[in-house]
View 1: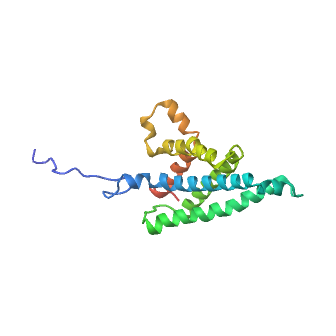
View 2: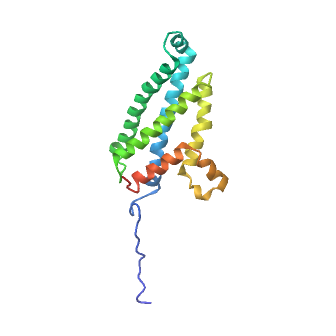
View 3: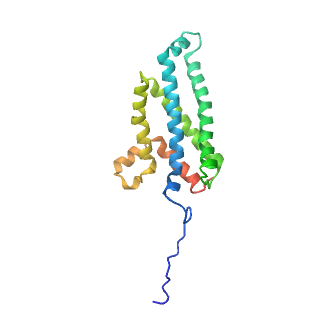
Length: 186
């Protein structure tokens, strides 16, 4: 009995003894905020232009519809990239979140997620007739994204729910962000 150690030796694969639950869900939250803000602003902005009549006036001009759509995508895309930079830089420099991997890969992953949210926001805004209906799309589209992104461990869910989770954009983005932020992939 004298050879049994008094303390258990711990080896950490990722993180250290100071790592807490917030550190493990941080990548999910960064991705969620990027997705949510871009989805909300792009969807409501285009809906506002449609309901105010601005879009109808633009459609009456000789501009091709495809050019108009690409113009919106480029304009909101630039805004989405700026917004993504703000969220990521705020997370790093103000919230002091430790990024083990490449910051450029973190930005690239979030920018790709922002473009998915942008496309989805613009697409779904075509089905909404008011801001109230667009807010309902948040409950239908965005809330399942956060629930199935890994914030609740998917291993503890039924197999059919895990299948639903694998249909969500944020599931894959969260996985990539975890690999960059926590595991140090570059």
